[in-house]
Length: 185
Ligand SMILES: Nc1ncnc2c1ncn2[C@@H]1O[C@H](COP(=O)(O)OP(=O)(O)OP(=O)(O)O)[C@@H](O)[C@H]1O
Ligand SMILES: [Mg+2]
Image (cartoon, rainbow, N blue to C red; front, side, top):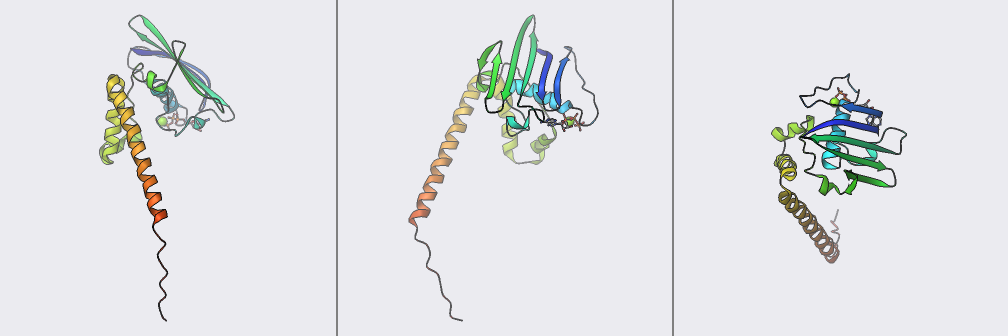
């Protein structure tokens, strides 16, 4: 499978662009700040339904725009598939695969990709959480059962932390304030 073309509208610094790629190795050249990483970010978005570096979609639309649109067409043998992502401020995002609305979870695995960027130096230097997350990203794309278990696991951890937080708050509320100690001068 390879990505044949990419259409970007108001995605970061790409107001309206169309890129086509060959099946062979593609090298993207351009000056600093010209939008090379933004282009890769758009490809990643079509794999995972989100950016690899922006905390939320509000960071991704071009300055003064109120949303963005990404479309990618892939070719697997002779089968062509279309993935679209659109985001509107106040209206949220919509992901589509061959015209049908899909969730991020349903999109993962259809357009498999691996990204390596500066923060990934943490894979070597950083805590084990980075290595686990990297493997989760790879395995989640190739094994749907792994992804399901991962989603359930993350949900359980979130619930456990929430219960522990509540218990801590309750315990704090029940513990009487320590009496002030007056020390004679
Ligand atoms: N939301 C946004 N709206 C408009 N422009 C943006 C937005 N976010 C980033 N940019 C612009 O995108 C440019 C950076 O793009 P990108 O990071 O893709 O560059 P690059 O080609 O990878 O550069 P380098 O060679 O330095 O890595 C900057 O000019 C920045 O101002
Ligand atoms: Mg870059």
